[in-house]
Structures are given as C-alpha cells and as structure tokens.
Image 1 (cartoon, rainbow, N blue to C red):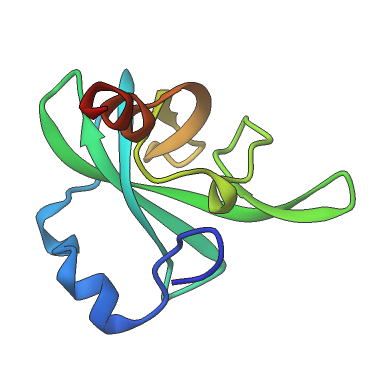
Image 2 (tube, one colour):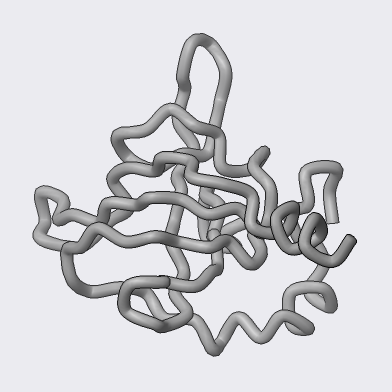
Length: 124
C-alpha cells in the first residue's frame, strides 16, 4: 500500500476479493462508498472499488490519468479531484454517463462524507 492507501501488491489486492465487484453498464447517479483502490494493470488508471448505495451492489469505477493545472491526476472525466489521494471509507455522489462510443464511464464525483470517521466517533 502506498502513502495514500492505494493497494500496490497482488497479495493486498487479492485479500480484498476484487472479482466480486462489477463494472456498471447503465447511466446513473449514485452514492458510492469507496472500499479500496488499486492501480489499473493495463494502463494509466486507478480502479476504485466500493459499494453502490442506491442499487445495493459492489462496483468498480475507473479514474484515468490526465493533466490538471500542470499536475497529473487520476480523476473521473468531468471532475478535477485526484481519486488516488482520497480516503478509503469515504462517500461520494457519483454520476455515470455514456461516452462517445456509447460505453458507460465515470463522469463526476462530489465528496459527501468520511464514513469511517463517523463509525469511529460512534464507537467512542
């Protein structure tokens, strides 16, 4: 795992059972609770794995590397938030939409709250 919590070793990734997460195929607006993140092994991207609170399923979303203000970030298509630096256990309002080829992609992300911090506060 790197300093931002992105899983980097095959052992770390396999412990999280990434095969249980699906790629959404329909346009939607959802609340997305990030479980964990990994680097995309076939290109310059980041895969965010988490829970789709609206449709009650585990999904994976892809944030692609692109330049923003002279810095390379990993972000949804229309949002300039570097998803490689956000916290696991955070909740996001997410928009999924079709690209020019008709495939569904991650368009936007808007931070809602840190779920893990809320749970820790309740335990105290």
